[in-house]
Image (tube, rainbow, N blue to C red; front, side, top):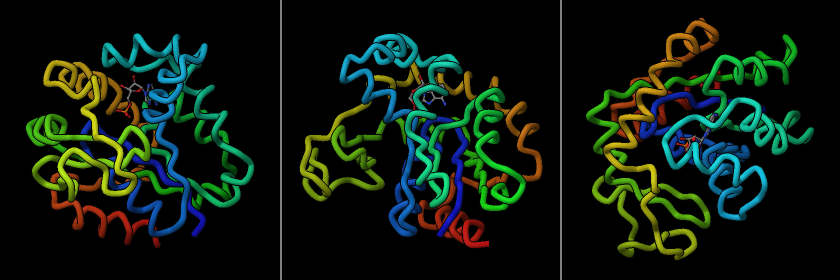
Length: 214
Ligand code: AMP
């Protein structure tokens, strides 16, 4: 089903988990700028070397670089079939780039979700989060552990804890999120669909799905 979905929210708010589930159910490609950044870093590309310090310090990658990475991955096919953007846009300048892809008619297919989660819940999720470096599936050691401890259910790869998933880094990343939140809420206005992201994952998903289908 054609939709241009955005997941906006603090680190640990569930953007990746919900994006993966929605993408899987409706056959939409998920574009996670965080995963793209990590992949560029892993491959030591020019842009990867430039963005590495930002990720390591929990800061946002400058708009021009992240926009370049995002645009490179948005093909004409995705613009006609739809896609899910997980973690982009995060600033008003990025939001303007995102909007520039769509005319009035196409905007009807946009669904911009804001996953609202308090800091203590984020902290619990971030400290327990484990991710698959190969297929990017996300786990939590308590609430959604893999079947075989430390290994991805999908591809068997050894799960890792992200370098920026620490208490200290979360504080920095959360502050960055708050710095932009009001401006982003202002930019998207009534287009933004606020979802209580503290609820059970399946309940959050059902709320998202019903808005997605509208
Ligand atoms: P994430 O996996 O979404 O938490 O992103 C990990 C890191 O990648 C962030 O802390 C930023 O350094 C960078 N990043 C991802 N998406 C963006 C974005 N839209 N704007 C700026 N930096 C980003």
